[in-house]
Amino acid sequence: MNARANAVRAGFSRGWTEFRGSFTNFQELAGGYLMMPAIFVVLAVFLGREPVEGADVSTGTVMMAAGVTMQLVMLGVVTVAQVLGTEREDGTLLRARATPHGMLGYGVGKVWHILTMSTVALLLMVVPGLLLVDGFSLRGVGGTLTLLWVFVLAMLALAPVGAILGATLTNPRTGVGLIMVPVLGLVMTSGVMMPITVMADWIQTAVRFFPVYWIGLGVRAALMPADYAALELTGTWQLPQVAGVLALWALVGFAVAQWVLRRMARRESGSRVQAAREKAMKRGY
Image (cartoon, rainbow, N blue to C red):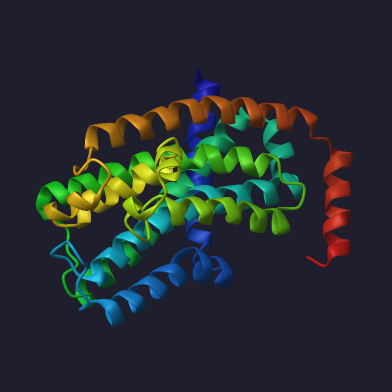
């Protein structure tokens, strides 16, 4: 028990160290924290006064809700996959496997790192939006609490997906680009950027099996006025269903991800890591 507790504590410490280190890496600072908030806030400011047909809300507010959702999806899936793929290649996973309960500590550290990083990224999106975008606001205490629990469940649901995808990457640089194609496809068809009711019926049915749709629905429930729900599929926010679907994805995802990571770690060896490093050097990065 003490060994497992020590591994958990070490994981939290490692995650916190990685989080602080992300502020000293310009590429991670720009790509992970600043780029997407800057894009969506600027777009929302310029589009902020345009009304949305059929709802008493500005286009800027819709754009900000889309930005929050997309930020969570990109961090939870793409960033986790990239980090895991890179650390598999550089031998970090092999070193974790070699220590007692090392994979437990590694998993705790990654979850803590992504949660802290995502919290800052969310604040960098929401706070400037509140100050600069006309009509954008948290819908009282209820809206704030809704955004918080949707944020936590979203990251818990998405991080295992990113971990599973990252475990399959043979080249974390080009592989991430391939992952982004279906991720962006889901974002575009799940009602994040435009009302889902404009999509074909079969698309409306299909996207409800994935967490992106439910994350977007929960974010809109926190940030949009009540009458905007009329543009949703059922005309309501369906918050109990949002919580249930995301919790189910989190539970199943963590179980599958744990199995995948253990299987991947067992296959790793010093020679495989060295071969991966040599391939990376030949690619020039």
